Amino acid sequence: DAGVIQSPRHEVTEMGQEVTLRCKPISGHDYLFWYRQTMMRGLELLIYFNNNVPIDDSGMPEDRFSAKMPNASFSTLKIQPSEPRDSAVYFCASSLSWTLAWGHTVDTQYFGPGTRLTVL
Amino acid sequence: KNEVEQSPQNLTAQEGEFITINCSYSVGISALHWLQQHPGGGIVSLFMLSSGKKKHGRLIATINIQEKHSSLHITASHPRDSAVYICAVRSVKGGATNKLIFGTGTLLAVQP
Image (tube, rainbow over all chains, first blue to last red):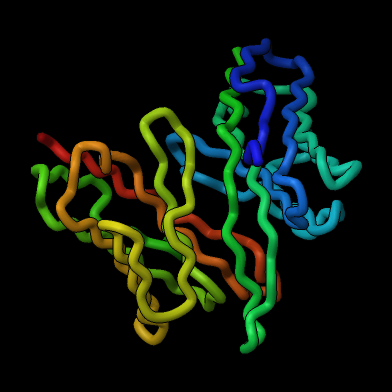
């Protein structure tokens, strides 16, 4: 498998422009996660989906951010309008979860290479 | 106070040294992950633990659920181990069992 695929790998845009980041999860995985990494705040979970349905979007910073997962093989994270403080590396990750005998649900997340966003 | 604390924040070691990175957390968890982020930015999942100990090559991860503490050990360290090591816990707070909370990472530099 090619792993989690993200595009573009680098994006430079001007403040106010719309930015769309794309992610293709590993085939068969039922969870998809969007993370943001900055020097100041480290890695942060923005939103995650289970079977294409958003489960927890409490990490989405504000209404300028939106994420969709129209099908099991594709997701987008959109920022409109973009601001310089949105500059960060955005990672997508996917996983296949299973429930262990004692009821805990655990999984290994596989990360994409990330998209480095610079908003001027 | 962060819910996941790592120590040390920075670590410089000589090749061949035994290295320990610590992670403490304050929330209930269902699992703990150790991740490695290479200088180029790529993130790799090293271990996922819910109890006990796991070993993969020169890497060993342990977790003590009662003490809410995990350690990542690297034996016979090598310059290619230089990376940021990130601890992340899968919180059960609020019933959201698939939400990862990250530590701030430990920057490891292994010198030849």
